[in-house]
Length: 324
Image (cartoon, rainbow, N blue to C red; front, side, top):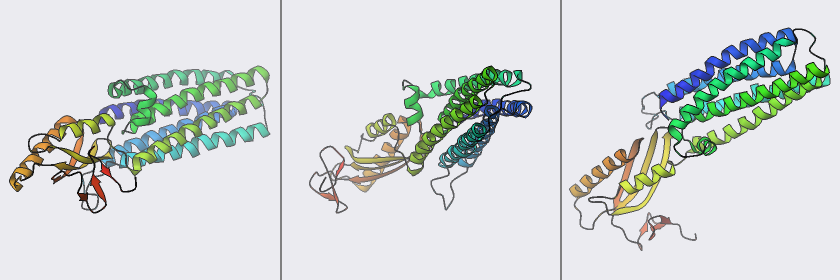
């Protein structure tokens, strides 16, 4: 994902949510609708989350330091994880609390009855536009992957987060519209509570899903399979016979760490090995659209010798752990 693409999706969502939040709050003040209050807090949470994503992107752009020698790329994952917490607490749990409160003391919408329906319909239009921008940005980078697979496997958090937030916002607006409409038709405020509860459950599910995905990124995910394979294919060449074993890990959405043991011809001189490694690094950087930090260990391949006293290079090129 390009940084500009992610920023465009974030700004589209932020602009829509600020306007929607204000209009929902006005509608809540005029009508006292529980669904409108839940939706108001939801929009505030979404707006806060988009600001957090922008802050995370800015902090991730800082240059590496003596303490953080691999840079600050994972700041984007940290802030995306905070987004899931905000969505869970400020969005989901508050909506569930408001639903419980309204169900315990239901009352119909008695004044300004046209306001919540109008606000929700307009909000659906604005959220649809924001969602469409996010879909366009996702389509530009997901290739042939289905959208849900892209959301689950992407190493860049911003567009998947915005996609899920906008999807949740659209479905939540439909739930809110249902609750408000049924309350107006039946004069039973419990329908309003049902709409708020549905919004809360939806936001909790999305927040938990996001937290799981961001947790996986924070502890370190390998390069995408197509990038991993491209790196492994690029390493062999003049002076490098093949890859004995290799590990990759994302240091940030656009930065990947590559550590590999590569086989070099027996009898190679130090100068030849050094030149071969330099060429291998050049091939890797040309093969993938990522900033690669590459560490290669040259070795003379042997399926029988041990590596580090605990593993042996197997015929398939991957370390074989004794007992496995």
